[in-house]
Each structure stands twice: as structure tokens, then as C-alpha cells.
Length: 298
Image 1 (spheres, rainbow, N blue to C red):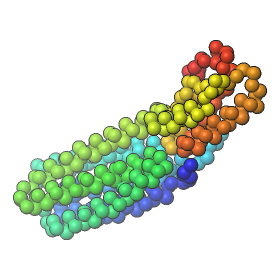
Image 2 (spheres, one colour):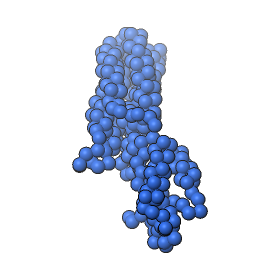
Image 3 (tube, rainbow, N blue to C red):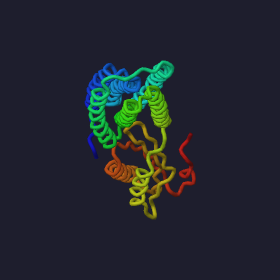
Image 4 (cartoon, rainbow, N blue to C red):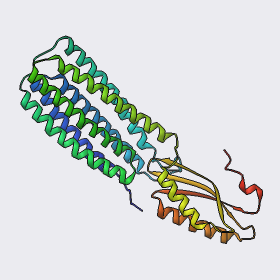
């Protein structure tokens, strides 16, 4: 089982990357006057806000269960992703406003080569940090880190698009192309924001664990099945990095309480070894009692 611990230190890496890229992209915009580069810098501001939100959420998620939160604080990670999606919409609005104004009043760009060079450096920083955040996020099933990493990766592609657009403006002399690229960037980040909000909402709705993990759960239970032992009404849900499994275990009615309990302990131990961060609830019932086959009360 992978030891998760406090992952907020990785959000600090994201914060540092956001501050660095904001500085680089803002300087690139100031030098060139490109509204496309300005839109790119605005998205990096969103990255900074999202990274701060992820840091706070991860700090909360690392807290142990308490009297007010008996099942832990793991769902807090979803809120940072929702915040990120909302901030993306705000940034998109700012980008569209700036782009429309520049579309109406186009302006020639200056020192394009220096500006694009700064943007390339910022993109490399974002790409490296995005790769690391997604890797850590997948390893520890952190919704906050994965969302932050995916957003940074989107930022890389956004910057690439802006660079191409600004370069084309310099080559063709068609100044309005800069504003068109900025609008395309705004549309792209709105799509990213919508996906982040959608995925986070699904997490808050207690969706079932992934099919691959459910298959592992079923395989473990199958290994304990025999003529006198069976399982039914297995239910699962996911809350942040935690997985919850509840099930009915049917055993011979003449077993002692201790024998049934010992088997339940074995089943839970096997599930914990096979599925990271799983929490089990096992209800023991006599296999020869018809009432034992009733589902969990809703």
C-alpha cells in the first residue's frame, strides 16, 4: 500500500511555477503589446489561484478523522478543482474583453522575438511541473494535484497556440490575427474549466470506484467464497483518495461470533492489501436465513 501523507508540498511547487510564468508572460506582453500573450499571462494568474486553492485543500485533506468528520476530509480536494474551474471562467471573460477591444482597434506588435522567447521558457517550466503533478496525482489519487497538472498542461498547449499566432502576425502583418488567437484561447480554457467542474462534481456525488479497482475487490471476495461462505450487495464509493466498500458476508448460522469475526478480519485485510486507501464495512449474516439476502437499507 502506498503511503500518501501530506501532498501540499507539491502544490507549493505549482505556486512557484505559476509566479515564475506570470512574471515571464507579463514581461513578454509588456515588450510586444500582444493581447494573445496577455491572455496567456491571465491564464497563469488562474494557475496561481488554483495552486493556492490546491495547497489549502491538500492541507485539509491530510487531516485525520475527527468528531465532526468521522470519515476524514478527503473530499476537500474536489473544492479546489471547482475553484479552478470558476477562476478559468473569470480569466476567459477578461481575455475575451481584451481581445474584442484589440479586434476593433488592432495594434502592431513590437520585439516579437524576445516576447516569444520568454513565452517558450515559461511553457517549458509549466510542462515540467505539469508532468510531475500529474504523475504524483495519479500515484496518490489526488484530485487536486491531477486537476492542477492537467490545467498546467493545457496552459502549455495554449502558450504554443499563442506563440504560433503571434509569429504569424509578425510574418503576415495581419494585426487582428492576434485578437482572434486570444479569443480561441478563451474558448479553450472555458472547455477545460467545464471539465474540471464536471469531474469534481462527480466526485462530490459519491460515484463508484473505477472498474479496475472493483474487479480487484470482486477477485478478493471470490477467493473467500466456498459452500458455506458467500457475499452479496457489494457497494462502493470514492471520496477523494479514499475508497469505501460495504458488503454482506454470509456464513453458516452455527458459526460462533468469533469465527465469523475472524473471517471478516481476513477479508478486510486482503482488501486493504489489494486496494490502496480502502475502508471496509462488512455485515455478517447467517447464510440459511432468507432475511440475510435483503439489500442494504437505503
